[in-house]
Length: 341
Image (cartoon, rainbow, N blue to C red; front, side, top):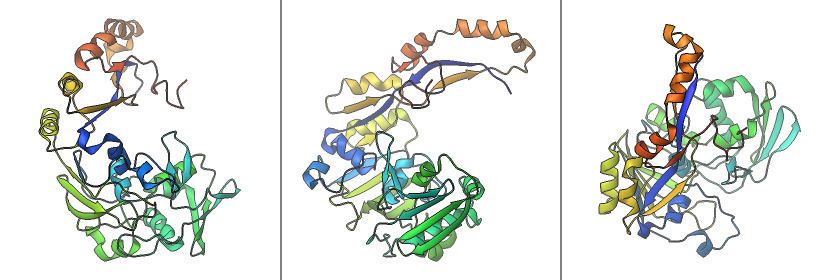
């Protein structure tokens, strides 16, 4: 179906937190900021210790093959071979270096040594192969399986800390795909079976699974053996479901929550005037649009579609619906996005 889009505005990315959590620590705990292993602990953590309490827990299970968004919850428990930095550049994660590219369809990864899953299982080349095969062999129903089945020809263990990926065809975004692939312990997956991600989970990430209620709550504890020195900054992490934006804000103001990642833009002034709340505002890639069904008899006339577009005042919508937190756009991508043209 062809459509013409009217984009009233792009909402800014907002999250709010209480000062005692130190917003920088919130980002570090969520795995949104990557640090160098050479940094001193005092440089890594604006504040050390404590349990971060937040919301947005709507997962059915804590399994990286099932969940794409919000991705930072998965990053607390699981790591990937490559990390994506704040500048959108790739860097080694569980891989000890960037991969060696043999040709257009062959990549070899050297793995970090001494890394273990939360259940004590070593992270090695066999674990990498197991997680990829889990996606492409149909051992799990995953929204990511189709892509990996299409492109992956073979994963070969060269030695305990070296693994080779052979592709069916060129995959231009292969390294980005690798950066999104997170690794679960083969031991725990086999032991728990269908209950993996519900009754237990084990990755190599900064936090370990403690308890989980599907779509209700998640509790994680600090991984004392995390491979990045000095991380994580927090002792634990708790997330629960609060669907109402107003209740989220009330819980934050009362101190029942430390951080909220989304809230109604109309409530922005209530938080902006509270000296006990820190608001971190930035540009986001989300946008609001009005698609028009060109199969409708009245909308087949281009002039009608143009009239609707001219009649919509995007700035008025931004000012009155989003409390000014947005901009009018003329592309699917915001100006700061690499794909913007």
